[in-house]
Image (tube, rainbow, N blue to C red):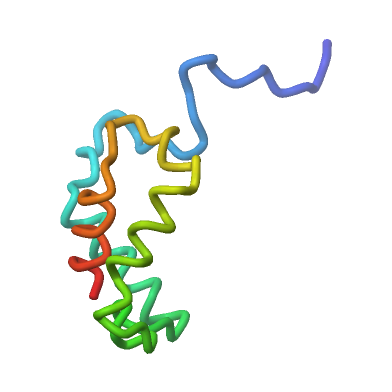
Length: 89
């Protein structure tokens, strides 16, 4: 008789909530991220980080030139990136 633990279920994930728990909401996730930012004492937004607002278009241009955005699961334009920077200002 072996004292080994059986392997985990292939559908189980250590990060998955129990099936009886409701899935996290977008609001709960964003609040958790805000709490983590506060805990780490990170600035609240690009303006608080010292990024001038008039540099956002240039930052969007640079981000769009980087190939990483092509891996986004949703198509992403330069204007999308600029809107993201504006929202995080």
